[in-house]
Structure formats: structure tokens, C-alpha cells
Amino acid sequence: MSACTGARVILACRDVVKGEQAAADIRREVDGANVVFRQLDLADTKSICLFAESIYSTEKALHYLVNNAGVAMCPYAKTADGYELQFGVNHLGRTINMFMDLLVLMNQLQRPSLTSVSSGHFFLTFLLLDLLKHSAPSRVVNVSSAAHAMGKIQFDDLNGDKHYHPFSAYAQSKLANVLFTRELARRTEALGVMTFSVDPGIVNTEITRNLWRPLVDITKTFSFLTRTPAEGAYTSIYCIITPESQMISGGYYRDCASAKSCRAGEDDGTALKLWAVSCRMLGIRWR
Image (cartoon, rainbow, N blue to C red):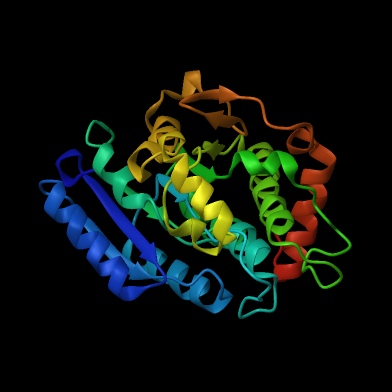
């Protein structure tokens, strides 16, 4: 997106220095870009609330919410609110990574007067849904992963207190992204809000920093199979700029096309249960 199409972009990051630098880089690379940085820590619900409050106080519209990046396969840790880190950040709330490349690549977007926020999943979407509805037609893009196919929602141990494995926790959080997308689509289909989950492919970003060293070496050896952050953003862009008539709300997308998620990702019963459990964990109630 760029200011030449009337777009206003809010870049939400936990790291203030990196966030300010990313915003400056975008303004340098995209002529006339209207992009601002705001601090947001999606491992802390207080930070999410403050961020959402600032959006409502300064923005009149929100047309696209891009829930991007997160944490992957990290050692066991908890968020400020006591949730297992990967489930808490990747599903209940998330951070930013590839957004600069997504922004630079969207110069062709023709829709004026929009605000785009790249940030959280369940809780932030809950907080911003009224603005999304007010701005309809609008869209929510949740960046998942092919790893969702190896995930299982452990309802009896979502926080990993009984057993924790970095990859299993990551795959669970990615499956949660797909299920959340599916249930959100069902609830917003009559409100003008479309939602999609995306597999960006294997993207060469800092998300691999917690991988076991031999796996990092293997990834480098087969780097020709990985994608740049810009390439990883293609499908998210596709889900934003493609005409509504060609898109399926609640759908799963890969390589700029509709794809089939795993069987667990199409389980409406599990999606509804996860929704209810997530609301209970956050102490919220969706209208």
C-alpha cells in the first residue's frame, strides 16, 4: 500500500527501534507512503488494549487487518498473562515480521482511504471488530503455516503444563489460526467482514532463530527452497486485493490460490470449542 492510493498504514511492533526503522525504510522505498509506527506487545493483553484504544481514538476506518508472523519452536515460556508463549502470542495475540515487504509490494492496490494494522489474532481482532464492521467491506488475513497439518488442539493442556514440545506447540498454534479464521468467517459473513488464513511458505526470516542448530544448517543448505519475506507476503496480498466474488471467506490460501487445509482445520466443532475456550481464557464475550 502507499499514500498515492490514499492508504494510511499503521505498523504495530513490539520492538520500538525495529518498528521505527521499518517505518522509515518503507517511507524511503515507497514514494509518498503514509505509514506510522505504534508499539504493541501481543504477549501482554494490557498492551493490546492500549493499542486498540489508540486505534479507535485516531482512526475513522479499518479495512484490512493483517495478522502476521509470531514466534516459533521456542523453549517453554509464558506470556505476561500466564499463557504458553506460542499459543498466547500466535493465537490469542501476535507480532509482526514481514509487513514491510507486504507494504512495498502493494503499490497496485486501488482502494483509497484505508487503514491497515499488522498485529494480533484472537484478542486484537475481538477489540477491533466493531471498527472493521463499521468500515465494511473489510478483511482479516491470518497468517498460518503448513505446519498446522501436524497440529492438534490439546484442550486438556493448552498451556503445555503437562507436556511441552516446541514444534507440537507451534503446530497447535498454527492450527488454531486456521480454526479461528473458519469460525470468525461464520460469525461475520453477514456483516461485510471476510476472513482468510494463509500459508506463506517457508520464509527466510528471524523466526528460525529458535530452531535446533542442525535444522538451521539444513535450512541454509536448502535455502533455494525458502522464500524471501517479499515472496512470503504474496498470498497475503492476494487475499487483500482479489475481488470478493473470487474469494471464499473462511478459506485457506497458499501460493496465491485457494487450497485445502488439513482435516482438523475443517472441523467446525473444534473451531467452535476453541472459540469458547479462548473467550474464557481471555475473559471476554463476543456479541
